[in-house]
Image (tube, rainbow, N blue to C red):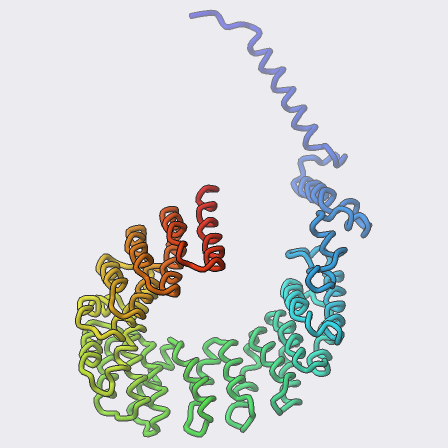
Length: 493
């Protein structure tokens, strides 16, 4: 074995001392504090360095302005060429909340100026953007100014901008309380009330729900808008309150707004109450609402209840809602009965075929795809709409959609192209290309090209560029840009 050199241990010691010296120098650099191994001190040093690198010397507002990136400085110093007004505040710049609050006040004055009546929309959008970022940090003077704007601004149509801006401050309970008071101070329909309801729907403070619910059914002109505001606030309390308000004394548009909200709810307590009340109510309008709610359960046992309603009730609205609820619940048995109704040619045939488009249950869709050849044109078109809503198409569904591309009915062909565009795959490109080649009208060609665009692969984009010929010059330019954009994205990857 070769002899170890006596210099190696000495060299290791010297190297260790040198590395230790370098490490200590790096730790102590920039601070001068002897407690170099204190974690808090090291964090403070790093924080000071970050501040110096981004904002310059603390305490100098001029230095802050100088250290801003060029794009940020331009946003404050140049004018928007479209409006002739100061350009929009840079996105994400929250270095100075007071500065942004001043900018908000400037925007309010600009929007209130009659000279800017045709330029106020982009300023309102900027106002909303800044307030959303500021949130609770917004200055009280800004909020007061917005409330004045909401009540007194001319033209009155611009008062909704104030509501839009106040609504950007999410979850602010004090603003919500002031808005509710303002709502009761202005009982008649007006732009101020519209702005208040817009703001309440965006702020989403649940504490105002009882007062809003109390406003339903007392004869106000904007009951429908109040219901829509409650729906936007959302939550269990909102759904239960609206369900409790269902009655035959409400105006038709108010009832329709409540039903529209309840059709989307899947709260078990409401669904169970609806199933119980269905057996007791004699009000046909309320029964129609309860039937629609029951469809949200997705529970097969409720399908039997709905089929019983369909067989015993003669009210057209109750029957239509029952068909819609059955389509939402799904299941092979319900699909077969819907299919039989649609093919039977009776008074419910058209409604049954239309409701096929609402089906999302894969087992139900399998029943309809197998019966493609016996479906009327309305049913084939509805089936294509149903396939568009599926997260993924199986082989049978893709085959059915390809059949739809060569259907005798043009509406079915376009619906099939739309379904393949949303959920199609690489193997659908050739079928879509043949569809575009045989299309007799530009709207058919555009549907096929949009389908290729949505598939979004290199092959789809290349085929799309080949198929642009028959389009008008304007359509070609727009669609060409879309396909070239797809190709560029794939090249960059």
